[in-house]
Amino acid sequence: MLYKILADIIVVLHFGWVLFMLLGFVLSLWGFFWKNFFNWWLFRILHLFGIVYVVLLAVLRQYCPLTILENTLRARYNPILTYPGSFIVHYINRLVYPDVNPLILLIPTIFIAVFTVVIFIIKPPARIRGIFRRG
Image (cartoon, rainbow, N blue to C red):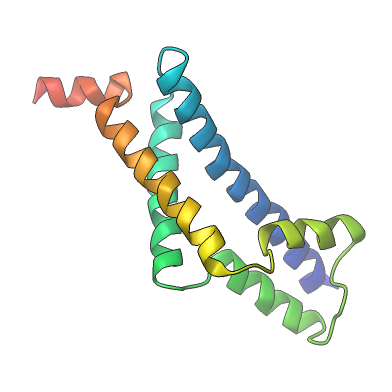
């Protein structure tokens, strides 16, 4: 039972990671076009490295470590589960692991990563800009 609970926790964390990546893109878009660009430098740096990591995994056709961990935990609990987790976790799984052509996910992921990198270069957070001006 412990493995099942841990796997469900991993799914929720994975879903949170996906939301963080999407939220970072939306905030970057909003900040660049409609309002003074936000200077949450730590958020932007984490998002930048996170989206680059996600794209590298996608381009290299590697599974996310969270996916591997969740699958390992589920297999230890019961490898033949047809409806893993609770009702809510089952549908979160469908959002995190949709059954679609990988290109449908890869192309927007690459676009978001390129956009994030370009925006970070064009308008870096004030704290980062200050570091480069001093040097």
